[in-house]
Image (tube, rainbow, N blue to C red):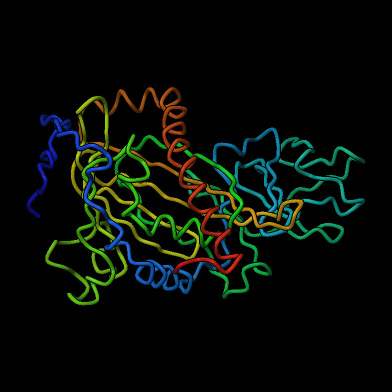
Length: 354
């Protein structure tokens, strides 16, 4: 495919930065006509019909260590996860079957979870009415399968989107908002808001392909393939955008957004610097707050890669880079959670314009 918009060739010798003209925020081309509520809503509804197999992201894989458990309440279901002696992920109900102690506050000893109230030990096998949940560690994220909550036909593994085949630097950011998972997904299925709502990060954003275009053109538009294993996804959004670096320096890329399952939206970089890098946004329902309002955890995994020889240095510096990557994701989600919470507020009061 021929690069567009000045995308640098994908070689180790090219320079990724470009100098972009600075358009004042208020002089950008309006995108509200293209961001049709019916189009976004239709893409959202199609996403919700895709199977999840009842799998939910519980958190970052590296946050679950050998010496302590990790707990989260998913859709009102209290869950605890820990590492078995082999390092495998183990999951189950978060309340001790004896007197209901919160197992997330207990200890792990040689792969066995030991309740801190009375010493009841769980090795991950059924015991005293405690039954394990299926768990999956994909190397970046930890998942748990909750069949009673999901109510779908179970799948043996979660629907993990295609990831870079080369080495990556990954980081996982988590935040919680007062909204439902569909509000998070709807935010990600509206790429038109990027340069308006996040001017500190994005400029020159153009949606070059949207689902209604795909319906008219067939599974592959004249713009070319959409991305790894998603070239025939008629629901994909393709976006040309420049990431701001400093001053007028920008990095132009093409990004493709897809929703492989009801609570996940994935952004693949298909052209430009970092091609094949991925940002996965997962929405996990939590327990309602004290007022009965819904709460959702945004668990966003960034898997960055590059063909440049110098990327080995970035990989070596990954522990220092991860906080910066989480900070960048957090700055965007500060605004996007406000977007999602506002959407839920309007929906819950019957005032949503869509």
